Structure formats: structure tokens, C-alpha cells
Image (tube, rainbow, N blue to C red):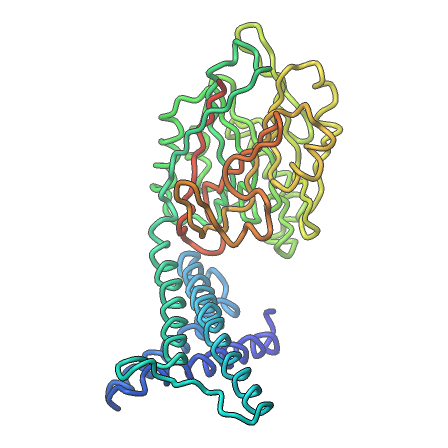
Length: 417
């Protein structure tokens, strides 16, 4: 997309959207004074111009030109305005379709079907109402996204208890901290990140498990945060797996003389240097009080076509049959339905991440929603099927949008009972 033609197409689409929305602006402002109209129109087109400028600056400048933090907010502002306009357009289209159907029906019947635009002397027309509704919906969305900037380091500790009949007695009460999707390349506040690590350490867990996406793309993103995350420790160890971003599939290589293969090998070394045991299609045995359980970890395996299938459950599971209880770390939750449940029914608990809960949604007692649920059946929280359980962590970090709305960064504390 970093071509003049590609940029021209996107800008043209944005201007078409702006022109369409402007008709609604004119509808809702038809009864205000000319001076107020000028103010409203000026604010609207200024915001539209800001969106275009943000897009072009993000597309044609490098990080070294303006800094990672500024580029991140440029991108987020553009996306936020774009999504807000899309939401508003839905309401405007409903009104236009309504009026088109009404017009066609009138032509066919040769009668005047247009209902009275005003319900009463003080009412407003349907078009004005839907225009206001669309603008309010778009404005609310954009406002919530702006508010979400303040939530990106708001680490929420989620506590759950999971009961298993086949858990060895020695492991009852085992405390696990599960984190996922650190995405260190997105961080800009080291002190805030360290505060989250302190929260993890304060839990005094028996075991810490990380389910992938340590970086956005490059191992170098971890240089500044090695001395933060190497503080993580637990009596039974800190274990990790790889996520789709860890393979560096989303950038051009070589980068600064480093190949894609070298980048991955360096990332594996980062895990080791921090004292984390990276599980690459293998399992380890956890021992406590003379009892043993198996911890399996695989490379990224997704049931979605655009993501890789590096994971090898056959290798990770080989030899683990003899252990009465098994925990699996697998980055992508689509793996659970596609392979774990049908082929490995003895895997008791699967831990995943990947979805981030889209960093946007609603979560209240008895109800949770996010757009990501239309792509992933399991996207946040606990899922159960018979004796098998899956927990999807919405992530410690963030990617793309530097914030969270409704779905906060999570430190999951799991107690086996």
C-alpha cells in the first residue's frame, strides 16, 4: 500500500465517505443560524483533513522521523475516525434505503406514500432523527476510542477456580498465572509495564505461563524490556510458547542486516536469557509432593487460513499419556475446536491468547460482546466442553490501537481445586 496509487485510492474512499456524511451534517444543522453552520462545517472538515493527514504521515514516514509513540497515535486516530464514520454511515444508509423504497412504492402505486415528516408540530423528521442517531453513534465510538488510550496499561487481575476430578491431590490449590500477547514493540511506558509485572509477582504463583506473541515482529523490540520481564519467577518455573507475531511474518527481511531466521533464533535466546523455558512442540513434567502432571507447549497452530500451522501436537503429546493431568499452551484458541478436542481428549486445560478481545468490547456480569467474536468462537474467558476446558487471555499488551475499551489487559490467576 506504500505507493502513490494505493494512497490515492484510500484517500478517495475517505473523501467519498466524508461527502456522504456531510449530507447528514447539513440535515441536522438546517435550522441553525448561518454563523453556527459555518462553525459546524469547519469542525467537520477539519477532522476529515486530520484523518487524511494522519494516514499519509503514517504511510510515508519512518519511525525514526517522528518516533514510535507519535506514529502509533497517528495510526490510531486515523483508524478511530474511519471506524466512527463507518458506524455513522450504517444509519444514513438505512434512511436512504427507507426513502428509496418509499419513492419506488409511490411510483408503482401512483399514490403519494410519503408519510408526514413531522409527527407533530414540535417533532423531527425520520431523516433528521436517523442522521442524529448516526452521528451520535459514530461520535460515541470515537470518544470511547480516545478514552481507551488511558486504559492500555490498566492491568486487570482476573481470578478463577477450576475443578478437576483427575488432578493429583498434591496439585490441588496449584496457583497459575497466565499471561499472553506482550507485544513489547508497542510499549512506550516502561514504568507502567513494570508495574504490571509487579502485580504478577505479588500473586506468588506456583507456575507462570506465557502463551505467545512476545514481540510485534523483531527481537530487538525486547531490548528495553528484558530487565523487566526477567524478574518473573515461580517455584515450578516460567514457561512460554510462540505466537504468530514471533515468527516475523509481517515485515520485510532482511532488516538491519538480520534475516528472518536469525531473528527467530535471537528471540528464542531472549526467552532463555530471561529464565523462561520456551516449549517448542514438547512437554515437560511438573512434580509436586511426589505427584506428576504434564505441561505441553506447541508452536503457533491456527485453524484460520491466514495464520501458520507450525505446531506439532503429535510431538508435544508423545509420551505424555501416562500422566493423569495435562495442561496445554497453544497461542491460537481456534486450535482447541479444530484439533485438541477431537484428537486429544485427555488434554484437561488449554491456555491461549491471540484475540486480544480485539481490545474493544463490552463485559458485564452475564454478558460479553466484541466484534472479534464473529471471527473466533472462543475469544475471551473460560470455555468448557465435557471435562476439557479452555481459557483465552485477552493479552497483556496491545497492537495497532494503543488502548483498550471494555476489554482490559489481563493477568489471569488460575487456581486448580
